[in-house]
Length: 346
Ligand code: TYM
Image 1 (cartoon, helix red, strand yellow):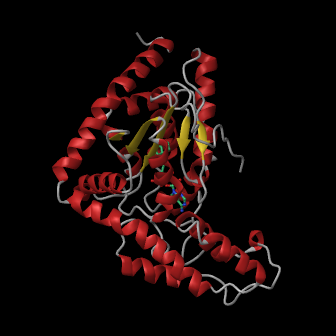
Image 2 (tube, rainbow, N blue to C red; image 1 turned 90 degrees about the horizontal axis):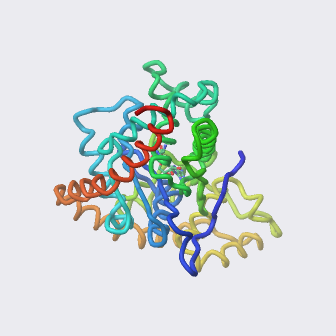
Image 3 (cartoon, rainbow, N blue to C red; image 1 turned 180 degrees about the vertical axis):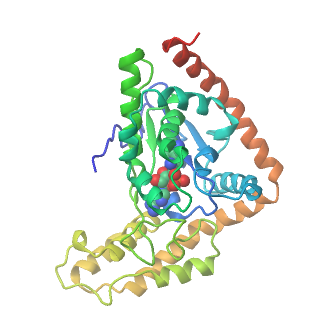
């Protein structure tokens, strides 16, 4: 898979280039797991300090698969609280709900006009979801990536921090932006992906597939209890014993590689000694899991506490989201005006 990486580093000195905007989204589909955190939210929290950042709870995307309407508002609140607990500062960033800014849907329609169906049918995630669907394939599922393009282009964002599974969607939004600019005049900057270490965290119970909320036993939730985190890390699939002396980490089996990725993220100070032990053939996975579990508990226990506190104050979360929509809307309206004008809709 080709990666479209425009900027892989935050410009630490002299600040970021003027008006660089960041946009990313997360579905309110129940569980937010450590894959979401490592691949996405962790880098959002870092980027928000230097860039004008928009983080969106994408409710319109989440309803493209079967869901329970009565439970849905709670899921949206839950996702918002988890993001705040995990470090998204609603003052620094604009944190909002997609459907609260109706311009997302309008721009999606305008972009539909220039998006070839064939390209949508080739999207890996579409093919996966279509194959697994028990209710047939709805147009909303096919058009899912067009709505993603609308999300990003509405804010003229040029940086999209996501996990590895969203790269193809960002490539598509670049194509759509390019086509729009060619056909109707220069309007949108071309968005680029920003990937981080751990852009693809694998399932704990089957390291050949991505950690995912749709696979039970594959994930550790962001707000998991400390004891459960420890239990799940202990149970993660690795190898029966250490590798041969002189082995290289690049050749590690997927479960072991996944553990090392997580160790580098959560316990960077301990990482080198375990790499050395791996190469020497003396590594003990049980010990490595213990170190990793301790580090994960240290990261996630305070987040869980913040999350639980926030969930006691649902009105505060609603206020945060209302404020986010209020700040997002004028930007969205300006872009929609411009896009309509360019397309001759006056
Ligand atoms: P969603 O809700 O599936 O996931 C949110 C973010 O988490 C990342 N992620 C992972 N990263 C590493 N390892 C994993 N196992 C893992 N699982 C998930 C995802 O890559 C994502 O960055 N379509 C998007 C939401 C979206 C969006 C957008 C993203 C809607 N509009 C515009 C960027 C820009 C999605 O379903 O993410």
